[in-house]
Length: 522
Image 1 (cartoon, rainbow, N blue to C red):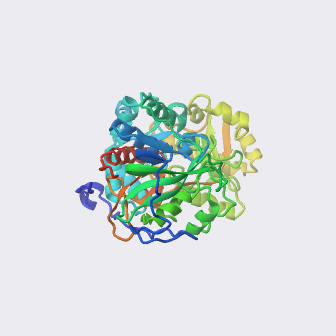
Image 2 (spheres, helix red, strand yellow):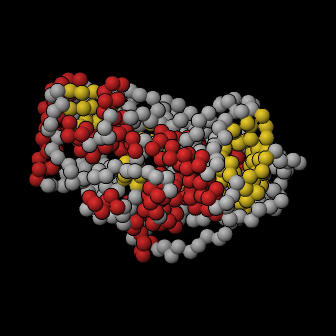
Image 3 (spheres, helix red, strand yellow):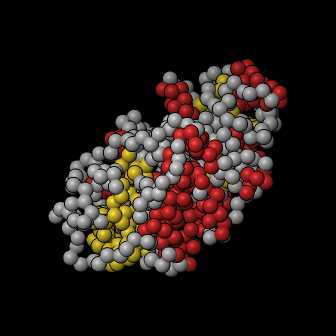
């Protein structure tokens, strides 16, 4: 399968100067750098395969499950390999918002949107490092991906309300059931089970077999693996008659590896990711000749809280209530310090800059802003002490040692602008949700802000057929596909919130469909 011409031009589709810029290949420490496409003693195929499948999928998140479903529907036998005890990866703890350009829900709300506008937003945030053909494909297929979740998986979405994540110029992010990635992962797992396939958990992939002819022909695994014990489990070899799909996610929990890419992201930074988000498959993909690009673009989520571990629930409040309908404040000055609807990098950098000066930041919303959240989330946040409730502005200022007069002046100015329809002097990069109202309805709610390592924008370079590209030839590696956070080039310097699900579903489906079309060997 060859990559199809997209016909995308800077002027014709995106109207932007974003170009297909390749980053440097990620270096792997202590790993054999075999010449791509050449077998070595380490790479030699096993004399005997323990099991055989048409398609082997590595990972069990959004992209992996979409690939597995499509490959199985196409008639292939499929194995889904997951190293952790439970399936779902980071996807199952995802924040649960899905970017769809031109969705039926937008139409009902009178929101005008298009794939072209979504692509412009993505490339603007990505600083032009996004590969335009990949962005175009994902944006154009976003509605198809949404329809797939409804028609194929039987999903139902909340109508009448959408999230406007930072960097999106309009409201286009649809809430998943329960505002959680589990709302999509569980239907994917159920669909896959109905097709006769269930993920093999505690199965660590330790090697990808790439033969003398350059084709990927299977994997070596440790079955019964107990994370993080590298030598646990029984070694087995699994043959992939048609193809291998890599959808293993990012490495945000691998401090050593992420510091190779970005030395600033030391162990002092927590991660929103599940513990298994480590670098084994990144290193292995590099070893067999995959072109890994833009590995040093690692996203830090600005809306996380120091008062809970991991991703938690605070991002729902900080983004969906405070950023959309409230304010983010510097507690030392009582003033706003950033456009609350700017992209994640802009906001995270602003918070970290203030933290370096010993200043703290908070997300602030009133009762109206909180009313926009999915039912039940605020109760959990209050019970856990992640969000605090206050009866008066004086109570808020006292709790966070904020200068009261400056705090009140900030809110008064913001409310005046909202009432008069004046473009605000801080929140000025996007069109505000039409439901925005002045912030004045007690009680008031606050969460503390602490950025956490969240998403790896870089990864395996693929074409629009989801084929993994060879670092030495710039051609597809035969029978190797990749999708989701294991790939690079889609999001560039900054991934806009809610675009991960779109990327994973679109490219996961493409990878699964094309993997099943490969001519079998042996």
